[in-house]
Length: 149
Image 1 (cartoon, rainbow, N blue to C red):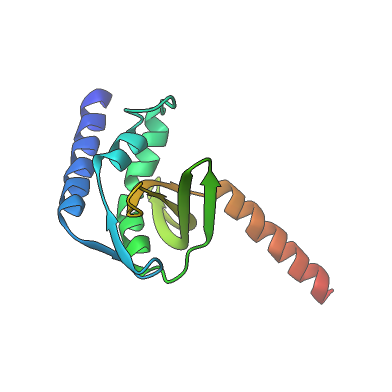
Image 2 (cartoon, helix red, strand yellow):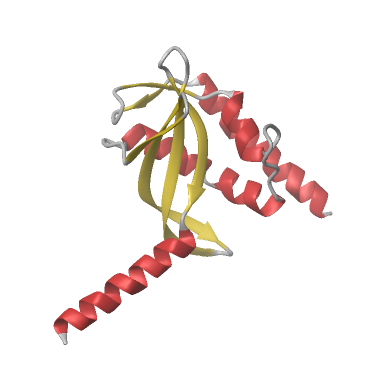
C-alpha cells in the first residue's frame, strides 16, 4: 500500500518537473534563463551520485519543487556563491509557506543552481531549513525580549 502511495506521489512530482523542463525559466537574480534538466531530478531523488536519499528526504524535497520554481522566477538577489574546485554553485533563498502534516508554516527554502562548463546555470537542488529557522526565530525573539526588559 505505501509503495503505491510513494509511486503515485513521485509520478505526480515528475509530471510537474517534466512540464517545468519544457518551459523557459528566467531568473531575475542572475539575469538569465535556468536550465531544468534530469540532473536536478536525479539529484533530488538520489538516483545518481554517491549520496542515496531516504524516502522521507526525497518526499520533502519533491514537495518543495513548486517553491523552487517560484524562488527561481522571483528572486532578485543571489544569497551565496560557493566554489568547490572548478564547480560554482549559486544559492537562492526565500521564505515560503509549506504544508506539513496538514499544517501550514513558513520555512526558509534554499535553491541550489550549478554552473555548467558553458557558464549556463542548471537547477540542482531544493531544501528547507525548518529546524535551524525555528532556532533562529526563538533566538531572535529572546534577544528582542532581553532588549525590551
